[in-house]
Structures are given as structure tokens and as C-alpha cells.
Length: 290
Length: 177
Image (cartoon, rainbow over all chains, first blue to last red; front, top):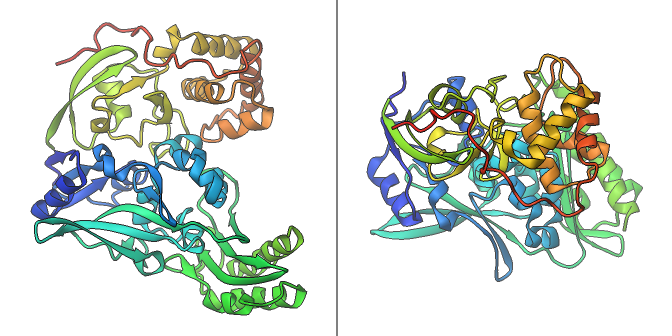
């Protein structure tokens, strides 16, 4: 039996963070697609209160605010895939959605939930890292609604662990509108396209100008306790002409900077080889298509 | 476990039930509302046997908290019995022999309705992608895909207006206090 004995469904962000602060012991419910099976399997224990945040309008919607696209935490993967702003500015997220679980889960699962679950293999996390995303965190400060922003790489601490404070709610994900010449790729490798937890995933982005990559971002999934940024691979690519030598050096840098574990999905050796090969393949594809 | 009273529309019938806070919508539909067409397969969103429409959008009812149904429209396989597109898919499944043990069928039919509403003339590959969240343990996929393909014949090119939620309930006993 659980200690869960209270259910609330706040209808504004302020009300939600107020209750979060006041009640303390709260489990947050958004899409439920991770919470339900994890609770059933005993991996997550319900706290005293279940807070359903689906009735909070401030957590919905996808909008452009200045030079950023703001994706409300409750945006489902399906909503993201079909939204005109995403299709225009962040087509990488459409590709990501295509490989995300199944139609039914994409219709229910939320971006905020995927980020807060902080799985090392979370499908949206590597793409969000290479898109330079930050998270908008809401809480109460001096009896007022307070929002702070945190770059996504700082947000992840370990499997299922984030820097979200106990009385804080993830309100949105913010992504800069990409500059001219921006290219971004994501590849998820698993045993089948649908409903699979990836053995590895990899994302690479940058600005490509006359065959040279700059502002490079590289991220890897499922090769460590959190999704990780690939600083050494970025350095191997930054400002370089994207030729065979650069690509080969970047692939080696990528393999050498990840420290995966062996588990049921793949061995550490296999994961490192896949990181090497996929890095190479993605960069060759970028080089050939521009 | 505290109970929560919720109101929703189940296949067009206004319904009020009281459910434990951690109950799934699937359990509520089967054991509280008494509609057993929706099946429990895996309980973790892998198999799609429990697929329903929530406000016209397909999802796994085993992953949905019953409390989240408050104020919303649920359509189950029973509701598709009075839905033109639902009936068309049902007929196509029968004619194609797309049913072996039948356990995955309700989920397949509900998901097929969602697919054809969004894309009335899918290619075979699009049909495969559309039902990738639905498992058939008899592995009778070819006939299921044939059936969905056959159901698209004579469909108008534009998406049909959503008919979900207007179905008659097959049971009169779904309104509970």
C-alpha cells in the first residue's frame, strides 16, 4: 500500500507552486506514461499528494518569445511534431518524435515529463542538448511566482535525478531560434524503431558555412548516468573544414570520451564502437548533403 | 487510498464514478464502468490492447490515471459500434479475417480509427507505422494491415469529421454515483 491519500489538480501555475511549497510531499503527474508503469513496478513510490498539473494553462502551448521558442512542459510529443513553429525552426524535434515510443505514447507523453524523468536514454534529451535548450523552473519566492532559467546540461545529475528543487516545477523548455546555416542531426540506435529504449543515441549540431562547422554541439545518450555533452568531440570539429581527416578525428574523440556501462541492451565495447561509427556516419552525411 | 469523484463522458454517456487516486483508466473502464472490450495486455504501454480515445486522441488507457479523465470524453471499442468509421473498420477486419485470438483486435480497431482520421489514405508502410504501438501475439499482422487498407477504400480524401464520443453505450449501467 502507498501513503498516497490526497489528489489535487491546480488550475494555475501560481496555485500549483504554492501548494507544492505548502504540502511538501508531492508526486507530480503530467502525461503519466512513465509514472504509471514505474509506480506499478515499485520503482517510484507515491508521496502523500498526487498533483495533476494537466489543468495548468501556463504549462501548455508552443510560442515564440523573442529569439526563443518556448515549449510548455505539457506539450505532448505529438503536439510538438505537428506544431508549425517546430516544423519551421526546430525540425530536428519532428525527427525525434518519429522515433519516440508509439503513436499512443506520443499522444500522452509530455516533453516536461521526458526531461524531468532524466533517463540517460530519454529520447528528447540529446536533441534538446544540441539545440542549446534551457529549462524554465517555477517556484514561490517571497510569496510571489518566481521563474529561473537553467541551461539543460546543468539540470541532469544522475539517472532520474535533476537539480529541480523540491518546491519547484518545470514550466517550459526554451530553445534559441537557430542561426542561419544551422544543421542538426539525431540518431537513435536500438533493436527496433518503435517502443525501444536506445542502446545509444547521438546528436550533433552546428553552423555550417562553406564546409566548415562552428558553434558545434555534440551530445550522447545512454553512455553514462545522464545524457552528456561531448566536449572533446566538439573541440575536434569546431572551426574545422568538415573533411575526411576531421571526421575521422571527431569519431575517435567521441569514442574516447564516452564511458558507457554494459547492460542488457549492449556491452560497453559495443556502445563505444557505435558512438564512433554513428559519429562518422552523421558527419559524412552532413558533409555530403551541404 | 483516498477516493476521487470524477465526471466524464463514456461513449457519449455522461458518467460519474468514484475511483482510487492511483487507479488506471483501464481498470476504471473495465471494473468500475463495466465495459470489458478494452483489454489489459501488458500494463506498461507496450502492447496497445488497452487503446482508447481521450477527446478523440488515441492513447494507452493502462498508462492513463483515471482521475485525469475528469471532464473529458472517452471512447472505447464499444463506442465505435455506432461510429461510421469504426463500423467500416470492423467490417474490414471481419472480411479480411484479421482476427485470430481477438485479444489485440479492440486496440487495433481503435488505433486504426485514429490513423484513418489523421490520414484517410495511408500507404502500407504508414499503416505499419500507425500500429507500431499495437502487438498481435498471434503475429497476424498481414491481414490486419490488409483490413486497414481495405477500410480506406471509398474514403473521402479529407479527414472525416470526428465521430468519437457520440456512440451509444452498449450498457445502460455505466452511470454510477
